[in-house]
Image 1 (cartoon, rainbow, N blue to C red):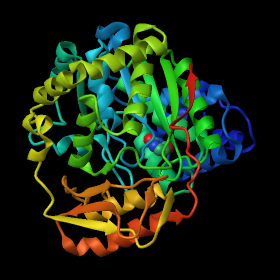
Image 2: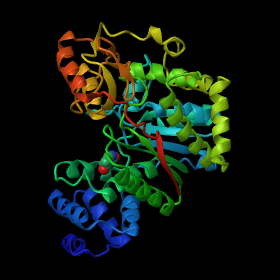
Image 3: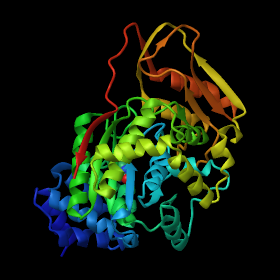
Length: 434
Ligand code: URA
C-alpha cells in the first residue's frame, strides 16, 4: 500500500477501506507517514467527506493507536459523558456523582480548559488536595468501591488523534464533521465505557454555532458509537447563554455543589438532569422518564451530594470546601460591572464572556498558561432579564486589578440590550438515541 495512492483515491471521492485507513493511522502514529501527506489526506476529507463506514473505521484505528482502558470488569455498568465544550459547563461535577449514586460506574478521564472554554480537570484542581493523577490500579479500585473517579487524560490515549488534531489545527481542517466526530469518539472509545452520553452544545459559546451543524455532528458520533458496539445517546443543549451563573474554577465547583444539594440555577439543574437521566437509562436499560425520577430523588434525598463528598475525599480533596464553599480562597479583587442603560438583555455572546473570564485568570490563552482557581465571573443578569441603569450585571473576580479594564471591556462587548424581551430558547434542543 502507498500513502500517495490513498490520498489520490480520497481526492477523487473514492471510499477508503478499513485496512487502508488503518494503514494511514498506524503509519502516521509511527512517524512513517509525514505531516505533509497527512495534511493532504485531511484536506481531501475536508472536500469529499467520508462515508459512515469510513468514519467508523478511522475512529476505530485512532482509538487503537494507544492505550485502550479495559473496563470490562464493570460489565454493562460503565458509563461516560462528554461535552463538546462551553462556558460555565460544570455538568460533569454533577452528573458523575449523581449517576454513581444510582449504581453506574463512572471511570472518567477529563481535559483541561483552553481559550474561552473551561476544563473539568482545572475545576477539580481548585479543590485543595484533589489529585487528578491516579495509578491505573487506584483508579480502577476507586471506581469499584465508590462508583466514580475523575482524572486527567492519560498521555497515551488515542495518540494518533493528538497528532492529527494538532496538524488539523494548522492546516485549516478542524471544521470538518467526520474528522471532529472521529477525533472525539476515538478518545471516548479508548476510555473504555460501555455506554456514552454526549452533550453536544449549540450556540455562541459552542464549537457548533447552529442546530444543523450540531445535529449532524451528534448523528455522526452516535453512528460511530453504534458501529463500534457502544450504547450511546447525544443530547443537544443550548450554549448560546453561559450555563448557570458562575464561570471560573472554584466558582463552578461551588455552583455544582448547590445543584447536588438539590438547589442551584434552574438551567444547570435541568441540563444535568437531562444528561444524568440518559446515563442511567442506558446503564440500567430503563426508560428516560424512570431514570429521571431516580435522578431527581437522588438530588432531593442527599445521596448524590453524599456520593460527591465520598468521591472528592477518595481523591484527596478537602471536603470542607464542598460542605462550605465560603472556605474556598477568595479572589482579592471583586469588581461589579453595572448597566449603563435600561432594557432587556437580548443576547450574550457566550464565547466573548468565556474570553473575559480567561482574561481575569480563570482560563488559558495557551496550553502553558497558569490558572487562577479563584478568578472568574458571577453573572447576576442573563439573557431575558430586565435591567435598569446602575444594576449590577456581573461580578468579576481576579487576583490582579490590572486585568479588570480589559475583561470589563470584553464582557461589555458581549451583551446586547434591547427594549423588547427576547424569545426564550429550549435548553435541550434534541436527543438522538443510538
Ligand atoms: N474536539 C476534539 O476533541 N476534536 C476535534 O476535532 C474538535 C473538537
